[in-house]
Amino acid sequence: MSPLEIRQLREATPGCQAGLVHFNHAGASLPSQATLDAIIEQLQREAHDGPMEAGEQGAALADNARRAAAQLLNAPPSSIAFASSGSSAWNLAFQALGPWQPGDRILVGRHEWGGNLASMQVAVQAGARIEVIPCDASGAVCPLALAGMIDERVKLIDLTWLPANSGLINPAQAIGDVARRHGIAYFIDAGQAVGQLPVDVQTLHCDVLKSAGRKHLRGPRGTALLYVRPAFLPRLNPAQRDVFSAPWGAEGFELRDDARRFETSEVSYALLGGLGNALQEMNRLGIQRVWERVTQLSARIRQALREVPGISLHDLGEHQSGLIAFTLDDWDGFELKRRLGLQGINIGANGVAYTPLDMQARGLSSIARISVSPLNDDGDIEVLLNALRALRR
Image (tube, rainbow, N blue to C red; front, side):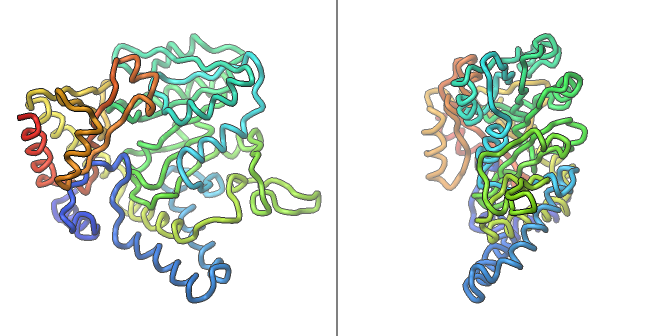
């Protein structure tokens, strides 16, 4: 990406123009003015024409967003559903995979997102077991170890692709190869991947993949994507149904034969209009170019942090993403986030509840997290580093 392109991105983003230094794109990124306009335009239609009467245009916005999401993931539009959050999307698919039986096994990485583990407790209460796949020497989930754990009782393999508390990029495709060979359901939590690096559901061999709209996609809060492999859809029986997800037909109420069986008739078309615009912007920009820019920026920041006394990086894996987990001596991660926020510098912070298995295994109580975007420039990096050096002193 050229300096001109980066400047144009920043000029089209109100948060950048307001002087904010934002390094919390893994929590929620900054929307463009065009994304805000798309939301407001649909709200104006609903105010002027009536909320229900504006639904026809709203449905067109949802279709546009579905096609844009499908393009980004290399999936058919019929395999895309929308939800209110990434956790909600994952939970809907997980609950639909039941019923769970005593002795069922769920295999997860050590870095599994805490919200997913919480959802799995329904299966545990039914007698299923959650088992952790061993890591390789780099700290990533080991496909060879996974292959050695497979038996007829394994009902689900679930992978958090890019964990919230490190720069790790788990080997999602290699895990998918194991799952496909054995015919085991494979879910991917791609909350930190979609919008940061290329995601091709065809090569990943996943049955379900989810991501939030508010993170690297720069969409609005209250939106999320759920991909369901078409051939896998009949195995999922959602408990949540209404006249949209299970419309009345010749045989009575029948589930839709596409991913919209996970949606309901009540939806914010305004938010989907904003999400659709954000997805279209990402597709025009090019996800490969985004990933190259994120890789360059994060490498520079990591190198600079290594030269700041008192800072420890907590990266795992052979190659890292644009999520940079670190601690600063004598500082709690959440307090560090708060103190930088007072200076107009946004970063993230994670506690044990976010990734409990990994945080406990590594003896971490909290970490601070920098997450980068093509929106960030040299000036942002310098402001952040100067602030960290000053707090250290």
